[in-house]
Image 1 (cartoon, rainbow, N blue to C red):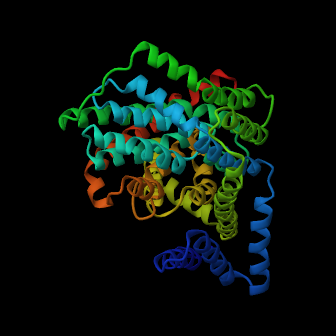
Image 2 (tube, rainbow, N blue to C red):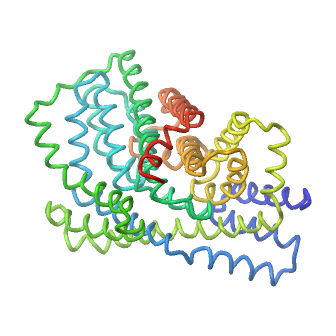
Image 3 (cartoon, rainbow, N blue to C red):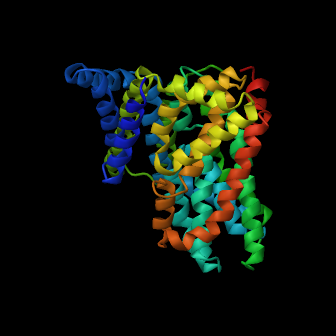
Length: 431
């Protein structure tokens, strides 16, 4: 590999992004341009096309469109409202109560829907106006909603963990799903701690504590939605079905619940299916072009050279993990999660494995790093969704967002240097 290819890859990608080319096309075109430097045009075009096509030919990837559809059904079928009501009755009486409700609701909703965007839009649109009515600032509500929505990407079922399994060469999806629980909960607790301190400092009001009767009723109302987690994750762990089969079961279950709650109408299904197809198309195009770029990087021996460069700096696992965290935090500010996982997993995973770090643990570290990137400009998709739902601006949200951002960094450091947070449950279940 020559330095020329690396410079062309990075420069073409940055330039394409800078002139407004969508990220999927920027990734695909920069990979193609880099390959054209090394080989003739005809084999370059055909190789990229072939790699994109074969990269999508995966049974595992079938889980993604099914989980996306399940998330749409959850949002439209009344499950989201019941989960938010349960969270409110559990946490509403604490200092900064509605902020805690937002975090817990995001953890429950994100865990079931597997989508941070869906959690941010659904919970923000429901709780945002309520927080304003009770005296919370719009910007504080948006900051809590933006950061807490990412917890569902760690708590299973999570599409991005499926993508990491694919990029890593077959790390167990079941093990990754189980490993995400404690880090996701820890991140949520860190956010709740900061929210409580901020709310007390700003003298935000405390809601009335729900009665035992209200709490019990909301819990029983939410049981069918919560059972989805037990069915999907329990079935995968027990080996009854694969993650892909579980995703199809989740769709059927959510469809039945939506009709049972009488909040889902037959005439709404075409739009739900169309929205799911649109989202799936975007995700799969990102996956295809990222796989193409990943192959080009492998062809040009970029991962090996990055590995040599990092290991030449230090052979201390702590130093290497800190460097990788810094790089991933930077990458997350301008690259979407899916391509980042597909491109950087083959680069960093061999390094950490060589240093004795478990691929499951590293997967959780990587996902949390990139979750933080979703909350930061210029590409942070959750940041823009949260700001849009709250009808405010990024500039106004920055001040309350910074403490939340630091809480996520603190959670990342704990998870990075205390591997048992990620590994205890997988080891308990024999993975």
